[in-house]
Image (cartoon, rainbow, N blue to C red; front, side, top):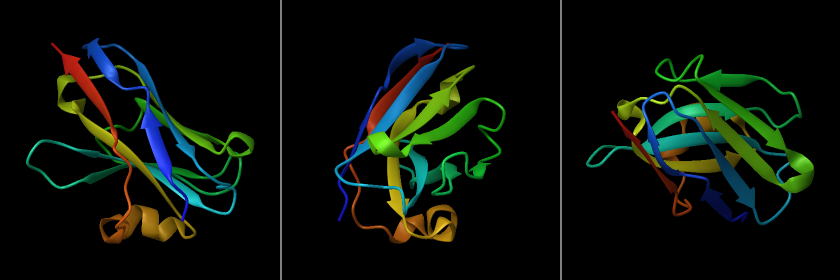
Length: 125
């Protein structure tokens, strides 16, 4: 199973930007990918997904639409999340995951048992 390592989190002020990276231990070109986040005491929630093809279709949670952009660089086994115009309500631990099926990334991610450590994003007002 592919291991995933998230990085790029940090502390920024409202309106700032961060780019998160998710590096996989193996090839991901046959996998859809997604970003998720978890607030303290809450369940993990979906943030964004991208289909397995370069330039593939993307899908975003309403709360981040227009501010976040997901992309992938298959030759580097890496998925990115560009986050602009950050808000305090974006403060969370961010995780990535992959699945052969895009549907599972969007609708069935709660059934995934293997997650990385995530990366903390903190946005101050």
